Amino acid sequence: MKFVDQPLSEADSTVFDLCRAEERRQLEKIRLIPSENYVSRAVLEASGSVFANKYSEGYPGKRYYEGQQVVDPLEELAQSRAKALFSADHANVQPYSGSPANLAVYLAFLKPGDKVMGLALPMGGHLTHGWGVSITGKYFQSIQYGVRKDTGRIDLDEVRDLARKEKPQLLWAGGTAYSRIWDFEAMASIAREVGARFVADMAHIAGLIAGGVHPSPVPHADVVTTTTHKTLRGPRGGMILCRTEHAQAIDRAVFPGLQGGPHVHNTAALAVALKEAALPAFRDYAANVVKNAQAISDELMARGYHVVSGGTDNHLLLVDLTGKNVSGKIAARALDKAGIELNYNSVPYDTRKPFDPSGIRLGSPSVTSRGMGVAECKQIAVWMDRVIANPSDDNAEKVLGEVRELTGRFPAPGLSR
Ligand code: DSN
Image (cartoon, rainbow, N blue to C red; front, top):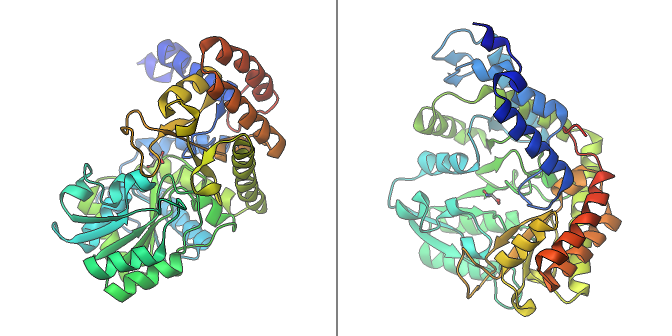
């Protein structure tokens, strides 16, 4: 059985070459998708560790498989680091990602047909906060709040009025394309007033909260869900934090309610990422993420772009290209050819379809992980403007040369040159 000992390059040169090609792509591009990042070499190494071989259904000290002598302390370590980092009573580190983490909350607290309220997807929310095409909008009655047309921001008076009228049993805060600070305390008070549980999905901003540059929902929410791979800069995965009173319901909902065995190699990588996020350097990282996103936003606005809500308080911005006479998709594709990777996105009150919307969404977590600063981010906005003004292949090609020169000067964590 010689093949089991071969390195990837020999065992499967096709996949090896694809891995190298993706590594090169991630090195050469300016990666601006706000839900992505570069994990450290240590996180990458733990993700590919022998824990991938292990089944561990259950929780530490109560498993359905033997051989948990090493896995139990590992999971306890990840739990205790998560609790310490976010000052939470309880942490479940098993969700496979953000959507399963959110589904576990539904399973813990609701029955099909119960009423939930969340920020609508086209207004910057997430599918699993009750959007119609998601199971959360199909199996539950869903009420959706939005952002104001004139400000692009959530209006808490509108949220309160809607909650009083509809009386949801679960109220979500959090989103995927909302660039302003959430008032978690006010959202919690609305939930309390109408008798709803308050759940904050901090997936996008978990790293900003860990780094102390954004307010934490933990003191205010019954439950906090998150992915672990966005600004938090951990492996692909999910996590749930909650008050002690909800710990049992949440744990049961994750396993056996929704999932089987946790992905223990991800638990290992998460433990490493949580250690990294508690370091003083991570506070600088989080502060720089915000500064960099604001630098891109300011430069784009100075060049006549409509940034939704007039700017950003966090790591991302949403740009409405309606006034630029180019769709989000055409702009995103041209920018990709120029080595600038982001995603097309609906903007609030978009008149175009989600698959060909008016906006683009971008953010600073990845470029900040490479050590780029305000000067580089302003330059990125200048290149974006050049490409959007003329999305031809020839023009994109010219910008690509300059982009490569910049990325060549900034090594990426975890990647070899
Ligand atoms: N798909 C993620 C994002 O890009 O924001 C949210 O789950």
